[in-house]
Image (cartoon, rainbow, N blue to C red):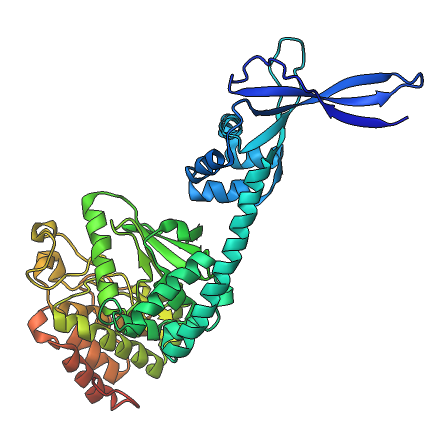
Length: 473
């Protein structure tokens, strides 16, 4: 006794099914012992009643969003579970629409009772010419990928040892869209039309994967997968997340304002500007990617903060290295008129083995370039209590370089005494050299402190003796 399945030649009417679709019963036929057939309806086969041409089908395909079209064409046949998982509440409506354009036929459970509509979806199958279109697309993609791989190898040879050339030398690790964007960057570099000044400097201080993120940046938050908040409940004006760059799999940090009011967004834009301008220096944290509106930006994932290393930094040479890193990183910003205004151990990060200054959110831009001078109100503390210079609570808009020098002194005093600083309470270490440095850098009157970072470095050398490699650029 055998079984076979047949699709009825005549369509039947199903309540609720759009008129542009038609349903054909699918029967399981069982041969009886007597030689007659027994018919059991097991599902419905639904297809377009309009019989569109291949050209019309391709036109309908091209109207779909690229991501949706790629998913639709990925497999010739799909089961209901994958359809519902992807399309959720729109599963039935989209299935109807795509079926009506002749892109696919679908299967559904038969009505549970006479006069009822069909039951749940069971799956669908792409129309033959749509499946052929998808296969042509796959073959075209393979040929395009081969072409891109060949061009990547040629550019890699022509650009070596430029960082872009190094990245293009291993193109197989990238998908086609990312490889295409990286090749476009390589063409720019080769034509000596490479983007902003200083970009090459930024590239050279980044690791290989960080370089890829920087070069592939397109101001699209979808390129990153957030994982979890770092230091939850810490307060402050921003939230920081650990995330993964989807293309490279590299862990990064995404920072966004806690609120999206005008002041918060302007602070983030100011931070992005400072990091983009000075991030080529190894002692300034760089920005890898950022939104255009100040709602988020991406930084490398730090190994630690200076606050995490307080015990180790009580060693004189390690503390001196930290202070020299702050001096080196702040020198260019200070020369251009930028003041950080919020130096503290938690804002000094360990990146690729180097200390780097981070968090320019309340930094002061050069005079005449501030976004809204009235935003910084006299009598409001700008900075972190205990680390901020006294003048920051009088008129933070007018603070100068000595304000950052005061904060460096407070960082030194806090680390060596093991005490969290409180406003106007001195933190003087026992070591005579460091004591002199802290005393002079944390004077209440900013005119009695070292006026510049060069003066601070000279004070360091007089009080502690010359370091192994403390030349000025």
